[in-house]
Image (cartoon, rainbow, N blue to C red; front, side, top):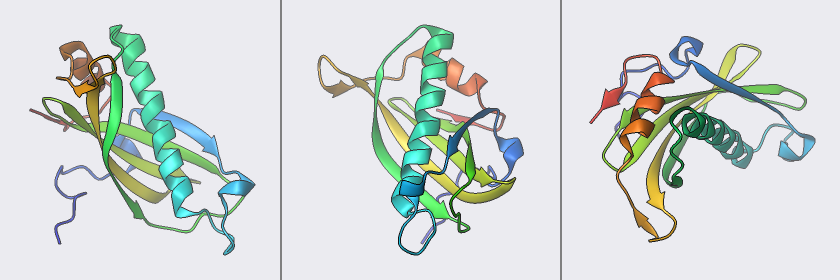
Length: 152
């Protein structure tokens, strides 16, 4: 099986790969019966990072469009327990015609505990159809991501 994280040539476990960050407190409700953060909680942390970046993009370029999640891949690297602060680095790794692939690293105390790749698809809420990623959105997403980033 091919490693999807190797495809883009970006080390998502390296904090230097990110210019955009947000933080989430690990909640007691995020912990499972084994005492560590449950896998579902990681997906919520990733969503938080994506939403924060997408909102920043909308603020920068003035274009608001909807996004739907087409694919989410998470690589769990280390156990996290309560309490903790999760730092979420989010970046664009690829901009396509109708979708953007976002890469993320989740860090606790400077250590990468998980990586993710998410394909988000531009969506028109009125027509309920996918749309091309608007050019100002592409440019704003690329501006928030250190190079290299693949633009199609």
